[in-house]
Image 1: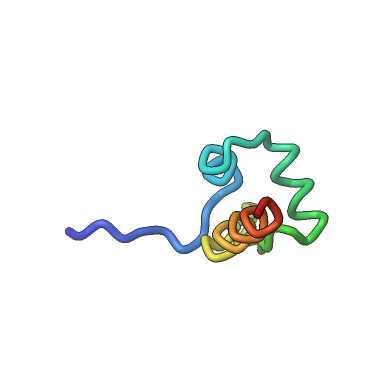
Image 2: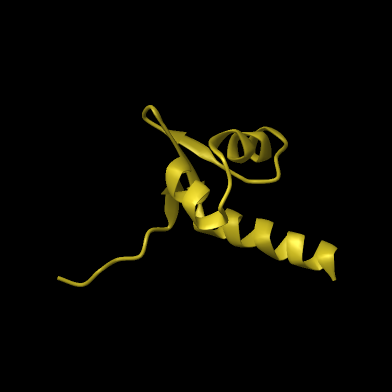
Length: 62
């Protein structure tokens, strides 16, 4: 069976990917800097939102 890459991540996965604390990830979500949605009782962050956040930070740093 082929491995399928996720298109939406859980908060702990975003924490690991960005090297941020849980609180920081939720701060970014509340500030609308990181898009997310709820599925059942779990918050999901689309991978595109993570990429957009990183791209924005890189542009600000340039």
